[in-house]
Image (cartoon, protein in one colour):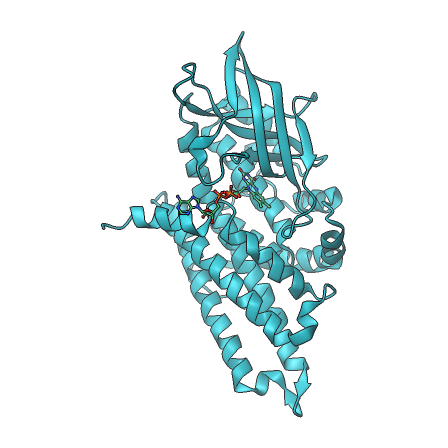
Length: 386
Ligand SMILES: Cc1cc2nc3c(=O)[nH]c(=O)nc-3n(C[C@H](O)[C@H](O)[C@H](O)COP(=O)(O)OP(=O)(O)OC[C@H]3O[C@@H](n4cnc5c(N)ncnc54)[C@H](O)[C@@H]3O)c2cc1C
């Protein structure tokens, strides 16, 4: 097993954390991943175990039950989970960067005290609901409406494809809603909606090609209620909050891409060493060692760029453009490396009992979720003087 990942930004604590998460992923996740994928089954037990390992609220201060770690630590953890199974990585990534982080960053002291200690235990997940049937890339097309009535928000509308929103562990969702009182105007706010008691309808979406053992839900709000105080930041600032949250979310998706690509590379390299044709290992053919070299180049570049972007975030420097580049590039190399890995496996890569088949499917979401590659190019181009 290749554990020697070196980068000037990594300290001993990062290296220890990598080994700890890698050991957990190999021992606890790997034996279950294929079956969970086949059954499209989200595992609450496995999720609780990831919580016990300390993967819920990794960057949140200890007073709320978090681990108070830097962004790079969190990214390494997501990378190591994805090296074995993208679904579990997605569960942790969505909970930390989309669920918990905006509550910590924009919540009042009261909201933080009410929600965060529960969300760092490993018993509860929180979701982030931006996407709607008519609002994907175009976030301003959000139609879900919230009206203030007697100190309560009354919410009506629908959200789709929401990670961590429909399993038994899901405690609630931050929704982007229109709070304008003028029917001809839109004013976006971010509101925390608790699931219980039967506050909204949830439905698990099962027929996915990707992340089959992560929980993806469809939500319907019919006069769902939230107290007036359950608003993040100021009324009307929801779009800004959601877009800032997505900047960090893109680092998580980049980490999933990097981990998936590393896992695919590791599997392909091992197979190339073991499999013999024409009397020698596949890895001894230059066409195959070239492929492995190309993969390694891409992994090094993607990892260094992602880690540098984490450094920018941890040092409170702007990182919107770098997060977009990181997600764009990493999702591209995940596609290329998974594809070449299947090529190295030959026919053996085309069967479901080989993990590479799952990796090949799972990379497909990376160029779509949390900003499609086309939208990322728009984000990047806005930072270039053209
Ligand atoms: C498994 C899964 C989990 C998800 N989890 C969440 C979640 O937790 N929370 C959440 O809110 N959402 C979630 N999503 C939704 C995801 O973020 C959206 O699918 C994504 O933002 C793209 O929206 P869309 O699918 O509606 O595509 P569309 O916006 O309809 O885009 C379709 C195509 O048109 C292109 N396009 C659109 N507009 C432009 C333009 N202006 N210029 C050029 N090209 C354009 C796109 O790039 C894309 O290629 C999830 C999706 C999946 C599949």
